[in-house]
Length: 90
Image 1 (cartoon, rainbow, N blue to C red):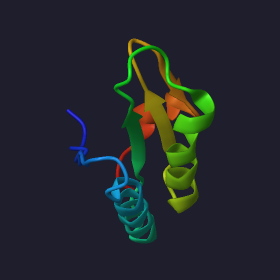
Image 2: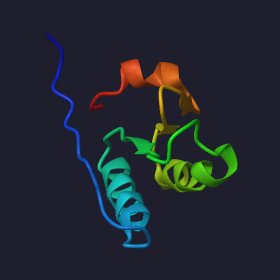
Image 3: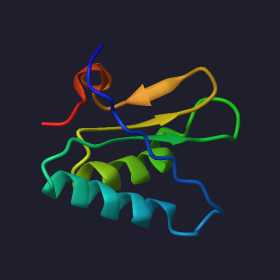
Image 4: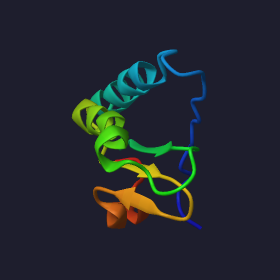
């Protein structure tokens, strides 16, 4: 088997700082030479609103995430979905 890839889940109420915390963790991981990815779940039913849902994904990407996506009912939007297979420590 391959290397273990740790997963961290951040949950909280709206406007509680989840995206800010995620940005800081992604930035520090990136500076430490690790590859980080983010997947935002939207639980409102139906496909995610691309414009609104992408704001957090863009912030994660700018913090250093190698992939940042938003996921909803059955539909998954991703900037570079194929990269998820190659995510591991450097």
